[in-house]
Image (cartoon, rainbow, N blue to C red; front, side):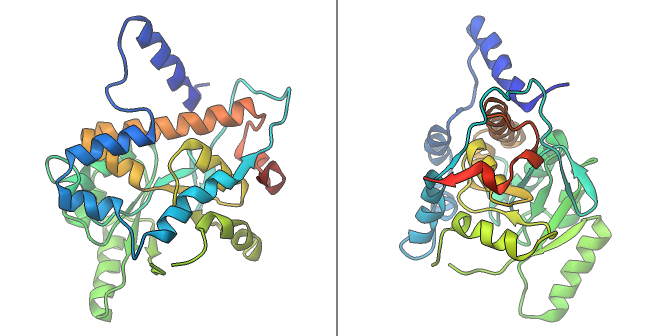
Length: 279
């Protein structure tokens, strides 16, 4: 059985022949190179945050205050990172969060299509933004066998909102994700355990500040059912389109898989609240 962490072996074996990854393996380098590849206006929108960006910084740094508890002598050669969501079993616990400007983040201006193709290639579901460059129907047509969700940034005109929902349903989207903004507040990850506890048995989809596979595992341990990837996949799109997004997703999933392996958590069901501590 293949594991997502097998990407490590691919990189090592290629390195023996002098072949190094074409795209960065760290978020910091991914971010640096993406800034050089994007027009300044697009970069400013993607990388920036509301106000003085306090909440954005807090969402990111809050992960550093949580740590997974190692379970010694329980390493497993095989792991299962699958999750069940909305009656469907997914092979991974991550999804592509809605990004309103992903369409203009690729070199050809069709980032929505690039992301949908990456979803098809990886089995990672995509939440398509209301603000797509390409028609939502064209984006859905690229999903292949991977289910897709539609983010409704609810307009003030109820007829327009209803039209968007009807179009999404007709195009085959499996769920509607309603966005409610809140631009200062607590770090999202620090609220996660309380949210999950308040709605037992209800799926909790989390995003905000996720930059690595380690972040994904921490969010799962704190009660998330699935974890959204945002800026990292935008930066991958800017550098390599569909291939860049696939690279980022494989990198994040490999890190999550390997962390669970070495710390003795072979399945997501093993990542209970007792697996993590605030440091």
